[in-house]
Amino acid sequence: MKRLCALLLLAGLLFSLAACGTRKTPEGERLRVVVSAFPEYDLAKSVGGGHAEVTLLLKPGMEPHSYEPTPQDILAIRGAQLFIYGGGESDVWVDRLLEAGDLGDTKVLALMDHALLRKEETQEYMTVEEAEEAGDEYDEHVWTSPKNMILLAEAVRDALAELDPANAEDYGALCEGYIGQLEALDGRLRELAETSKRKLLVFGDRFPFLYLVREYGLEYAAAFPGCSGETDANPATVAHLIDTVREAGIPVVFKCDLSAGKLADTIAEAAGAKVLTLYSVHTVSKDDFEAGTGYLALMEKNAEALREALN
Ligand SMILES: [Zn+2]
Image 1 (cartoon, rainbow, N blue to C red):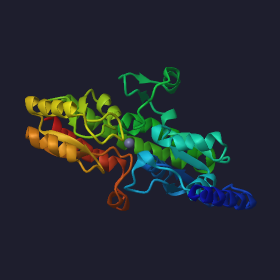
Image 2 (cartoon, rainbow, N blue to C red):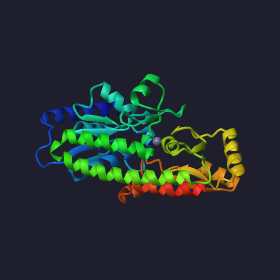
Image 3 (cartoon, rainbow, N blue to C red):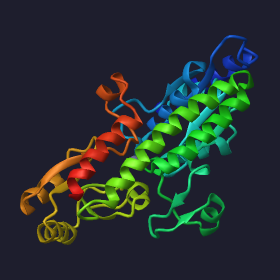
Image 4 (tube, rainbow, N blue to C red):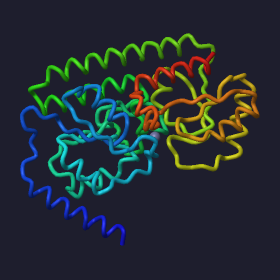
């Protein structure tokens, strides 16, 4: 019944929206961009600057893997000129709406169409065409590699310039500045990984960091693959992680941002290590969002935590 009400409300809202007529941005108005999760938000804000009015659907602190849009969210997308989303497992709702033709003529950009993809099962980089051929699941956390983030910034720049050619030069300049910072971050992470005492990271948690770890030639052992919704760890896996930390004298067990970290605590305590947080940046906390703490700042925190874990 609740669902039917929501659908009726949506139908009514869509009708009134259609009656409003033109959706083009009048002179002097900002480009309306709607984004699904935080990485897309950071990209749109960084490259769009003052020309883009960016609306984030996934509220800070919300779990990104089980998000479902409200009728108002769908209206926001339909009323925007550009909608940016991830394109992976967390965004199947977008595919449903696209297939049903429910997103109107809003331009749609999926991050995974512009990143170099990695399969969870293999460790090979692939283009999107190769990925489609293979047909298996690809890890959606493409932004955890700054190298991918550079490709994504370029894709967002091109989409903004196409929709708003009058400000194309500004988008180009903003993108260049953002890429400069991403390249500096990449350089720091690469140097830290190359000069580190050890290469193995241990996660007493989910593992949304495949792209980050592989980009810098690191190894990992994790309690759960990807962003698995699994909460009961396999006791044999936990025992293996404790042994690994103890035997190699690994100083840090990681937990993910916004996770209670109970399993990481258990492993760290049993093995005599400490727990640090690594930020997947799939979503951010309310405090970080309000403070304007974005991708680059959180990845700098990650770099510091990695330095401690690898030395
Ligand atoms: Zn995730």
